[in-house]
Length: 226
Ligand SMILES: C[S@@+](CC[C@H](N)C(=O)[O-])C[C@H]1O[C@@H](n2cnc3c(N)ncnc32)[C@H](O)[C@@H]1O
Image (cartoon, rainbow, N blue to C red; front, side, top):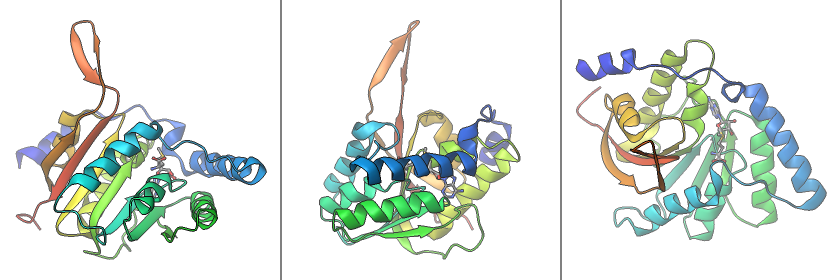
């Protein structure tokens, strides 16, 4: 299968500490400290605009219902889900493998009196329940998985398989990345997902080439594969 070959052949990113759980555990200890000491909530990954673009798409898409089951994979401090709760979305879940992230997200949601389920979950594990969600979100988590320093390709493939598994039929996957281009994401996800939509993001021009700092793509779960 050509697309699997492309996935195998694609060049991996240079590993970084952002690919380690220790890094994220430390990040959210600091986040909790800021929140407890001064009530400050650290900005989510890629800034507020990237969250707002995703929220706007979900709000405006006719197929998306306010009671759809939505999961944010690698939710961090939970800001994206908070935005969605404030927009009237009612069935929201956040997964993160960092207990510190989940504790922080719970504390912020409690303070804002918003009902969101937050669970400590490693999305690379085999124990995820199948066909649970209508929509899965990812802002920076596939990037973090891609920055692991060992078996990175296998981890990316496991990630894609698990996102496919937890989505219901025709489920949507909304991914925001700063490490991979739209073309690369399509190449990676192609064996389990078809491209549904690309959310326009700011672009820059350099040396005669145009590129995007952040890419936001919506995939639909493919049914024509096992
Ligand atoms: C770049 S941060 C993004 C956090 C949040 N989505 C945001 O936009 O602010 C990546 C997040 O993914 C989480 N993460 C990384 N690998 C994970 C895994 N295998 N399972 C669950 N969460 C993971 C990290 O703990 C971290 O919260």
